[in-house]
Length: 444
Image (cartoon, rainbow, N blue to C red):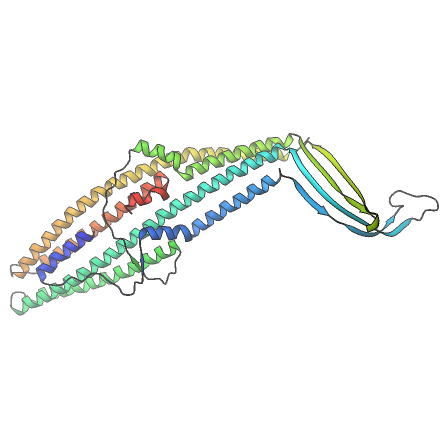
């Protein structure tokens, strides 16, 4: 892009004997590259932060499930000052008071229990592990999406910067043509209408420049928000729209690779595995559970007469009737069926994403070539029209028409370059492993 823009307006400068000034804005105080923008986005984008929080949440759920199969130990040290109604306890003896006490009691005791056999808890733990894997895949997928989002925002901003550069150059060119028309009028070669046309063209180009600058500021705001920096920051983009051809992979190889690496696809498989484990846990509700529990400590009415005591027991628990298990099973089977349908649909979606990305990449490659050819023709047209007007052969209608044609050609070229970059980052996202390959695809 830079080569084409510089070449175009350098030709006009030679024709019109004007000096082309480069685009510069002193208000820009922070230089940002695309790679740095993506790095900042991965650190500060709210979607990445939320996905990371969900991973931590799933890890916490796994820890809670795991704790059900680990020992539980706690200490109790009750102190009581009480009276007892013997009659209420079913004890009624002659010459024995109904109310006994008040008296004190002390107890210092350690309690513990441990699951020995609990298939329901075991499968719940396995389900939580699969769910954690799914959340990690979701986190990786969000990072891939943020890479694509930030890259596209940066490309759009690059396009807006190039539009401002083009608009500024065109204003300088129109200003030179207006002065040329005035000179031709003064020497009697052109009439007042030529001067008026040039003035109108200059006014239109100045308005277009204002629109382009406003559009640039809006695109920079979008970019700043996507990478989590202060919106008051004035950005200067260090990267420019350039063309670096990418050799596209074969569709079959690309699809097979994506099915192995796409985190959103792997996440669905982990979700299905988690549901399978949850179904096993539900079926295990009717299986016996064996736990060992016990306590040891000392008790007495006075601190001086505390005696040690303890107990250990083995508990066998088995559900005989539990209608809730049927409803739980139906819920889980329905969710499992929906997940399997999503997996089948996602497989087609992955192939669609890759095919669309490859089509867009091929089309963008061709558009860059065609736009470059159109730009060269538009440059020749403007040079020829400017020479004819300068030599007094024709009026400046041809010059203004050629100006418009060159502006369209430049815009087509910029648009093709931007679409080419967007197609490459879309292909990287469709293939998976976006974080590892985006630099290669974008030529960073």
